[in-house]
Image (cartoon, rainbow over all chains, first blue to last red; front, side, top):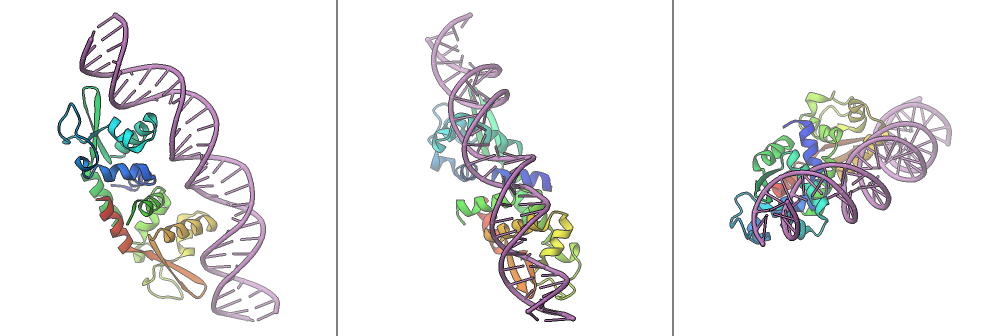
Length: 100
Length: 100
DNA sequence: TTCATATATCTAGAATTATAGATATATTTA
DNA sequence: TAAATATATCTATAATTCTAGATATATGAA
């Protein structure tokens, strides 16, 4: 972890919706329905479910999630039509270690 | 810690100078000279020293430090003419716990 | 007092971010 | 192939943040 990446992560954490998404993804099964196609949460939650829960537009959420992936906070996995997002606990730990 | 405060902290961490200040204040004796009046770092470092080290204007740094204090990241103590700033490790821990 | 120094606040323009609509692309299904 | 669905990107405007100069306030010294 270095200052530049840490600051990029900070930017993601500077918006309530983005921070909230990270909180939801701590326990996806508590906050999202199981996906009709994938029956598990191993790779997280699909973009549509996250978008619907936030109430923001599809393009806004897509931008948010892309940025969160770029700085390493999220890991994205595609299965067919869907992109699933989950937390990258390793980077989050590196970030908190850097801060502490 | 709640989402709103966590996001305010995120805003402070979204700028390299502010993040850098927090890093410097982990070990003030490594990054700043001892103050001519107070000979110790118990209450941190005075505004002027931080301002000089960053190279930004006095007003900018004052604004930064005020915001960092408002969200709890820093603790400010005044001794005479000088305001000293140090990290608020308790809030930082609450923040990293909330994120993790 | 008056002056000098340290810090805070006000104001404003520049830069960046937020956000959505339109459009493009990828993938599955009919 | 064509249509439907999911996601990404482009474009533009609104909102927020960055940053410094000017000014105000607080404190100690002369």
